Length: 363
View 1 (cartoon, rainbow, N blue to C red):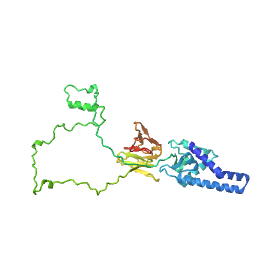
View 2 (cartoon, rainbow, N blue to C red):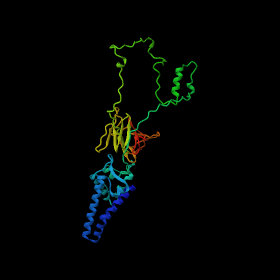
View 3 (cartoon, rainbow, N blue to C red):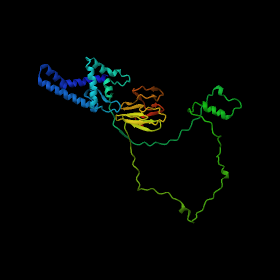
View 4 (spheres, rainbow, N blue to C red):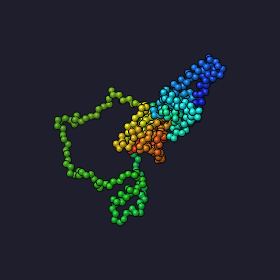
């Protein structure tokens, strides 16, 4: 709110300095030339601000305070026509003796979703965002992973078995071993199945009954070394394939779907069973035979400051599980910030944030 107010004051001061003051002075003195010059100056400044606002999302005041008007879905400039729609809503509020103008300008504070969208933003389907400096993409060479031996399993610590589960005299060793598996806290929680057959110390095949096969001699009578296949020597005429460096854009984010698919998101994406949008946004379709995921279930936004998601009015809702285990239930159109490692559950599907803007995935 304070940044919007400061941006409006800067734009108004610019208009008064470059033409409004001359126009007011000409009207006060009755000079036709001053009125003409002031009117032309006001018109030129207004048109320039309008074009800059529509094509880039900036005005002089917004650029000075670091905010920008962008489309609510695609995060692109909204265009000249939608800037006029914003101005028309503000002008309509000014008709009610000035009180309506104050209500319209203060309407971002009434937004229950926390996104600070005023009535003029809702009418033009835009959002005013704070813009930060973006970094230049870096080229990260491919990293060769070193194969390390698997750690040796540590010895099992004693298992505390309840009193009611203590083996009675005559109980078999197999039943006691099964209780050890059930009450061992050091083992991960998993489904314990009974063995299909008792383990055997030897192979199923009795090798003693296998007949001895004698070596077949050479039928052509050639020397044994002539019948062997020798390995070919190194070839110097073959060049190694060039190594292509991996280009990582620090402004993009990477997610992993529940089926293991990795997707890079540059700006805005809609996730669902069959998402659709008129804006130029990335569409991510998930496989959901049970139809527990809505057609357009949630929205993912990538900004220089981080990654957020918002539920798009889905039927089964969206839940965020943070890396520390805390869970957040997403409200409709409410932005929830994600940390790297957070898991988003929507219906029977899920996704996980692998990389956020500014994070080096190879670090």
